[in-house]
Structure formats: structure tokens, C-alpha cells
Image: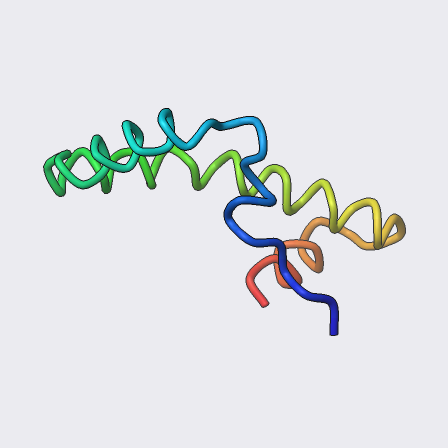
Length: 71
């Protein structure tokens, strides 16, 4: 099984100083704001995931792709 990348491996272009500022912001943000930020990511992630599914399953119809996404 392939190992998932670490946080540092995924964010090589972010300095530790900037990362500390980001984490401080996330920790201090009200719950509503954090939920709003997560909600804003969902449509983008679904688009990326569907794109990957279409690439891997080019003959699959939209209903089946939605099933695969949900799975």
C-alpha cells in the first residue's frame, strides 16, 4: 500500500513561520468561520474527484460516476 505524504511534504512551499500564522488563525477562528471554510472546499474537491474518476473510467456514465464518488 502506498504511503500517504506527510503534512510537510504536501506544503513544501510554506515556511514554518507562515504555517504558524495559518495555524494560529485556524485555532482562533470562530467555529462558524471554520465550518464555512470547510464548506467552501467541498465543491472544489468534488470537481477534482469527479475529474479523476472520469479519467480512470472514460466509458462510465454520470450516474455510475456519482455512485463511485459516493463510494
